[in-house]
Image (tube, rainbow, N blue to C red; front, side, top):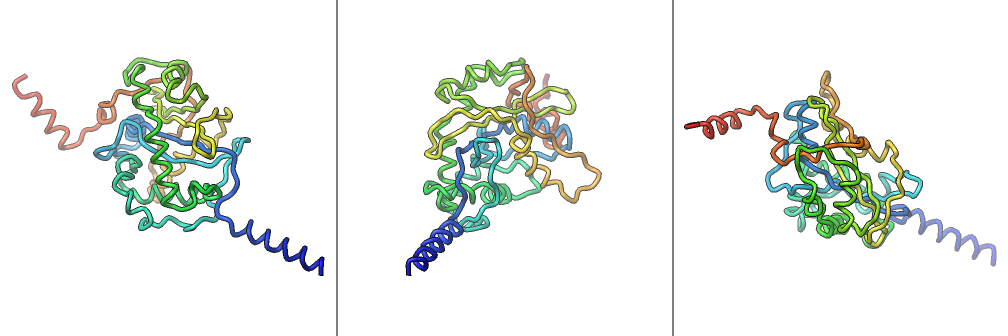
Amino acid sequence: MKPLIVILLISISLTSILCRDGVPFDYLMFTTIYPVAVCRADDDSVPESCEIPDRTPQWSIHGLWPNFENGSYPQNCHGTPKHFDENLIKSIEDRLIKIWPNLYPKKTIQSFWKHEYDKHGTCAQSEKLFESELAYFTEVMKVFDSIDVAGALKSIGPSDKNIGGIDLKNALAGVLEGKSFEFNCLRDKKTKQYLLGDIRICLNKDLTLRDCPGHHVDSHLNRVSRFERSTRRGQRGQPPLPSFQPCPAEFIYLPLESADAPSSSFFGNIWNAIKNIGH
């Protein structure tokens, strides 16, 4: 009987592991993006490819990603549900629309949330804090609310002046409790400037701050651009949108009005004409 008991226990353990949602991971990376820079860089590559919705905050959410210490990460895990279900987040959807917007007008806002949940949210479900789709999105919003990136960066911009990594680190030292973080830039095709595009903050599984391991792996940098490129599938002959890359020694924290500077929309021209009357 003993061998049968051992086999039964092993079977129960394996079933428990196989049926568990998510996968074990080491830490989480919270990424917030700067829509002004994203839309400037994208529109200067592909006109009218990017649009900042009304009510979007100065910095908005991109996602919260389970990671391994070696720089790799799990993706598209077994979750409940396995694929994004908008009905499960109806109670928080109004807030999500504001702080977790989709900047690509040819795609629905739900497509961005689906991408993030299916690829990353399902993997986080190994932790009780993220045991459901609603819990995942709720906790990500809590992280966003608890880390005031825009407020911390007021000491260095936005402005047209060049800044460096040390300026960014000093500005964020207080809100991040001195923990190391990652940041990336986008290169503007027209001006050749490097624009601060995102900030990536590392968290323990209980969402307390921790140092980032310091890996600058291509797969990490291209997570945003992968989704951006997916918005352009089937559009032959059009160039790809810019990819995030490590910032050089000097870069720009672009002024807020700059996102619309290259625009030559019909209503924009009318508004400019009205403003110039009498001048």
